[in-house]
Length: 492
Image 1: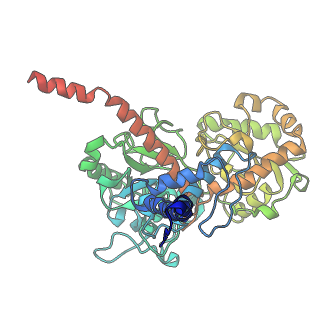
Image 2: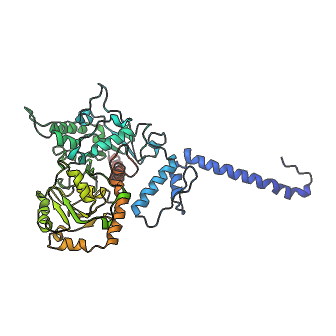
Image 3: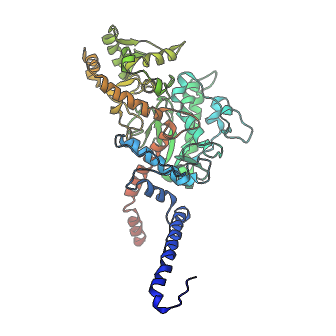
């Protein structure tokens, strides 16, 4: 309490009391503003973005430690991904998907149909109880495993489904990019959990007295199911996500479901009206070779082979170039260009060969893409892409020219052109690409649980960007829609 015994002392006494009171009020108002960031008119995510996008590029963690500043030498995509991750960590305290704040902070809300197990884990031999649709994902050791061998390279459907299921488990920490919601009205996208690549690989042949293969039967059932759903009718399927990574998967259903968003390996066997880069997502293959640790990656002078290719050489369609290159390069002393398969020790030998090579050829085959590109990245061998029609995963945020060499097919088959070009690349140029590969290789790793900016997380981010473009198109189309409805009502 401030006593004022003498009127002559009023100004000085008044100021003496006013200063501490003002400081206290300022502190209280600052604390209130921080609380509003949680539960009032300033959303927590917006408040976090204000912090992240402040003029200072230093980020403060929840425990008060200073974060590393964003380097001006990082690529733009790295800055974008780091900023998104930091904003999320600040906004929810770094908590995993199972925490209560994550669904509200998610970049993408996904509704997943509860299709019967025959469409997904039942194809892996899983049999739940009578009322079970999904296996428990809390214990990774109890999750049905996906078949090995070449089946595994197209297993994207499996990893995305597991990731959505795990988003409802409080015991699993994973990125807060995509979460499963239980009402389609809350969803940004509707996921169709059909293991279409596995269905093709294992069940595309007619057996016994069957008139149609199981793969065909499942596709027909799926089309009937989707076409009968109100969710499909509402937007004509544009907000549905269908995984068809194997180029031959969904052959019978793709035209009927062409309005949906597909997750594909490339567009090699699709017409532009069915699949295109505007609406669909290109996902990386799951690489077959083991990933090499960045600290153990051989440098330029430790790699004795200049150019490496091992695989099928005689291919149809656009793959004829493999045969031409084989006869051009097979006798060169610093080139490994041979037939190969996954049989015996084929995968292990390929991994060893790639990590002993400076450049690994990724040549068009039956389709524009193959898992060979992602094998090369996993072994930190600079990819040489000779495939004019190839589409690449996440290319809107990844600049492949920073870690890949692109050569036109017409140039590659000119005698001496390819080797002269690669032999002319200096050590420092190659090393710069090699260093970049070691940074971006994490974006092509499939794993469970998923991790920030791994292949699963990057796919969800790509889907989110497609959803945004769909909304933009819808909103533009609706510019005069309400006016037309108004005029129609006026004329009645």
